[in-house]
Image (tube, rainbow, N blue to C red; front, side):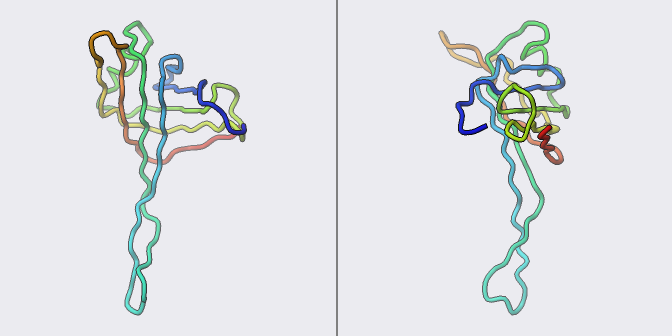
Length: 135
């Protein structure tokens, strides 16, 4: 997959495909920096520490069975699997699949203003590592 417009991402939460309701998805990972400078060094030195990550999602709200609210509301306070791909097509080297365990720490059941589309915006920390599959 070359450069592309993100308009067909796949997001599966707790084995439920919510892709049709996703308006934005971000999977972020980083690693802590741990200083290991010792006597005799003339500059600070570092090693990579523990990794951390988050999954940021924005959904259009839907309260029907097996849709956004019905799927995520019962998960608040639990760990659940989230699977993300840039395109809903087959998993491949150019369309990798990322699988993570997210802690559902927040869920805005109702969010919006008069005359606006009702949405759910959330940010969940990742517990453990993110698996990347290319086939």
